[in-house]
Image (tube, rainbow, N blue to C red; front, side, top):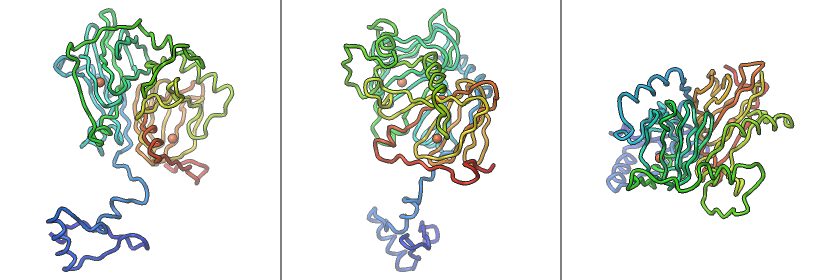
Length: 372
Ligand SMILES: [Fe+2]
Ligand SMILES: [Fe+2]
């Protein structure tokens, strides 16, 4: 037993470096029996010098996943599955079913006429529409029609359900949730709606009509929830905003022309635990490398390009999804010299900033580019 006992020693001043002796090993066993332990045997492990993500950088190619996602339609019904989703399972995070860090993601598919039962949960959720027509989501009575590249919130605690109109086509969207985080915090509740569905009690797309105008708020703007009243962010105005911004900025050296989706009531993130952004890489643009805390999931919404993550190149095209583990150097490039490329991203930045844990660092060598 003694040879297998953990003892993470480092021969550096200020770090734990206690050698095992027969007397200490016996002492550690006595502590074990009291459900206690000597910190110096594990201190170097539980307090690393810097974040060390257990997540791997992964690229999920849509062309590889799409047929499997569509196949699930023939294999299970939404009624039986609850939610018919193929989830993204990071090799380093399988124990918590996370796509990266404490974030979950999956691809949900629904055929015309299908409906998933209404429910609510403590986890915050979003969807990013990948393909199909006729999809809609109802959040607390607000029905929203959904189109390609639209970004939709289903915040924590809200009743929500998804469906596709009879006149629609098979629809696929990316789900993003903080399920692993909420489970880590042991705060996750889940409720199925007693009627399995909810009425749309407001005019269709009412929140987009009230809150979707740039720089304007409705006069009746009472809203005290911790998430954005603008529950849907449409692709058209988002892309137009990026194009307009690109006329008057050089962009970030690390992200090109990037804008955050915000809560128009506060200017803060769209939900308390999940933030999101859309960035545009101009034709031929290649960013410099940096790293930061937080976990990030990207989906290419337009164009094609590549990201170099921890020295490894990932080529992406439309609908491909990739993850960026915490504190990992990364840089992005647009593979086209004539078309722009857009990356949607959601992340746990609101958690990082709220807890005072956000930190970033530029890659200083080699002109800001990682060797490959
Ligand atoms: Fe849900
Ligand atoms: Fe970054």
